[in-house]
Image 1 (cartoon, rainbow, N blue to C red):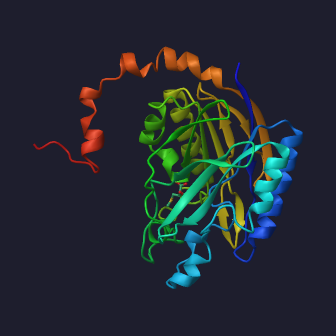
Image 2: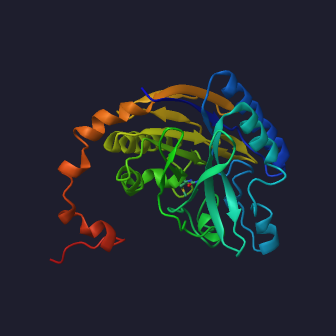
Image 3: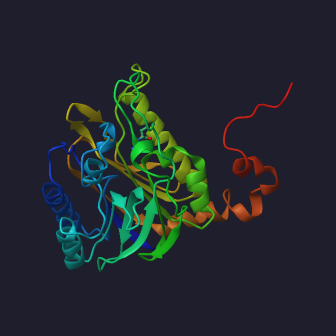
Length: 309
Ligand code: CDT
């Protein structure tokens, strides 16, 4: 057994006016609880330090940059890194990253148990749109504020296993898991901010949204025989509701732990990384069973091109 005890630390809503220090204090409270419960690793949501700001239309670059971190750790997040190091607990969380040369990414990081950053991922599948869209019930401007990630889907030797990350919308795309699966990933960590209503289809509500969320995670976990840790930012942010549904999914595709609220809430599960072996060595032994000679369209073509009649 190679057991990694994981805490999925859901955050409740963060209002637009709430500062990073307040949020970091909430994250530290969850981290303390996780350490007391024996966690090796605590995973926090996408854009964990602020409200889900891509719902707000902004034009002033200086205002936009107030939502970004140009150094990590920084003054606001140092107490979180310090506490994680004191407790000997690894952490993963998402934030808006501005690079020294001015690029903007939706990023997540993984630290080791000494608080050193050992992995960084930049969100590749950015949902939404880049200009104000009056037809939507509310805006989702990730394509305005972020560039698509430029780091691929790396997998790292960390915490005694093979660890990968993706972010929110990435979880809906089978390619995300498969690229990591081909590197032997044993645990995928991801955070999400998912509105509980479809802004372009008002009759698609929270029940459908939670269904699609779990469907994607469970399929990704099963088809690549990996643990998946999916962590929400949930609840009502300035009148905009985000669904909960923080879950831990085992390599068989089963949900083994799930939050019950839309507030700050920790769920904990002992994840045996060796439980990924059976699937990887049998039905999903890629080397024996994949037929790449038939998969060319996946990387040569983006959109749908029906055959000619
Ligand atoms: N944050 C994020 O990626 N949210 C998306 C919403 C999709 S609707 C524009 C998600 O996939 O949950």
